[in-house]
Image (spheres, rainbow, N blue to C red):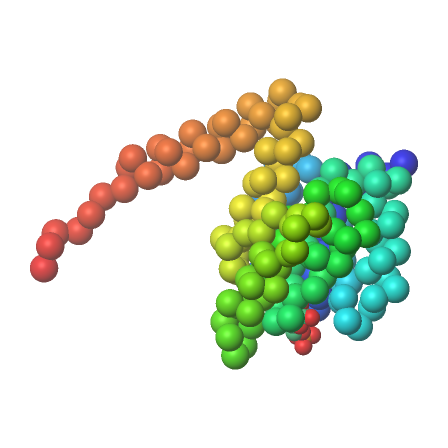
Length: 164
Ligand code: RP5
């Protein structure tokens, strides 16, 4: 069985600017992961093979990012019960609203957990994967609590400029 816990897949190398923010979080928390291009419409057989192998490989979550008519998260979810976390990538013409609607509007029965458009969504998908893994890992939960505490201190330390 693979030691990879979280798969990060995306429809194109052009999605990397967005999805690398998920990978950065996984690296920060020391989560074993992989990142791959798997295009739903250009590599459909590869997409199905990846999803079909996910349980056997021991993946605990799949973060899937795509833009436009973003089939990838939903079609992965159709072929595996490993949780799929969908990240809408900002598209050139519709700025990711198309991606968001494609991913979030899954019909009843096959869920995709859908995150915000762009880099915030990618980072939050990874943090959500960390939270899932932390259910079975007390040390990881302590890391997540410390991450949250640092954010809190940063926010408390924020100052505002004088009004103009
Ligand atoms: C989608 O089409 C990808 O997820 C990407 O967001 C978008 C554009 O792909 P490229 O033309 O940049 O390869 O499949």
